[in-house]
Image 1 (tube, rainbow, N blue to C red):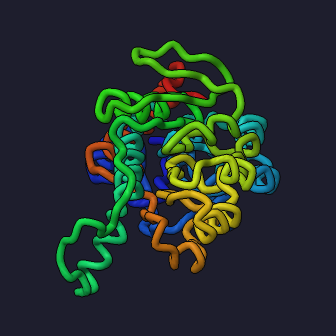
Image 2: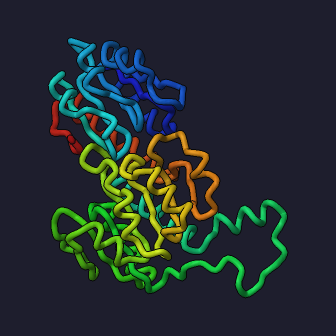
Image 3: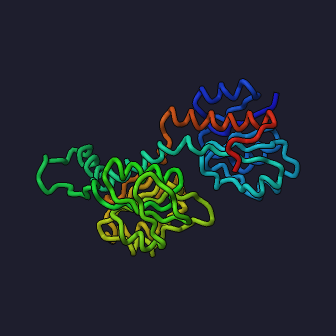
Length: 317
């Protein structure tokens, strides 16, 4: 029986599904693989099911000249922690789990939008601190989201799911920035320039993949272009945002607020960001629902099984 390393604890249903077909080792630590563990995983197992921040760089593959492993079945849609070209050159297939994460991530985006616009984090902290002295007409006046304009940066599966919720759920005008025009089942206007989009919307949402092409896509120029009342939301990858520029914009109140689920140097979150009342900060909750994580895991197992049987991989990247 082929051996499989699962690099983090996963829901039991996923592990049991994998055990039907593989001799499974589950690494019990919740932290990313160390440099040595990365190399050992390629040497000692036939297949690996890695996830976010398991950094399979070109250097890792260069150090393992003849890897035993033949597939990395990534748990997650984002795979910028894997050098896919280096993996393929070393003889490994790489897969991911698109689709399974779409609705959950979009829901998290809407959670952040509402929390930021309606200042929910500030209000909750006041109540927990025991200093709320009761309702009054001008307390915590935020931005009414219904009927406003949302700008979605990246109109892939997740971007479309966010835009759909905004249009049908909140009656929002949808504008977007994307490399190509999209055919959608709701009205949406494509804006050619990211800076132009930033200046036209009440809420700007980053929903692009991570990687070199999008690193610091959301930068000082974009934040300077935003309207003073507008809110910025990131549910994509932390490195998409120039975090120092965002902190400066929030400190100076150049924008109305921000809602973040991911961070540039995750899990490190700068004290300057944590100190800001106009920032809503979540601990990467994007897909944190049991049924979603089970679906993701089972999709990864289907990729592994297809590889084992010599079939076409459902989600090859």
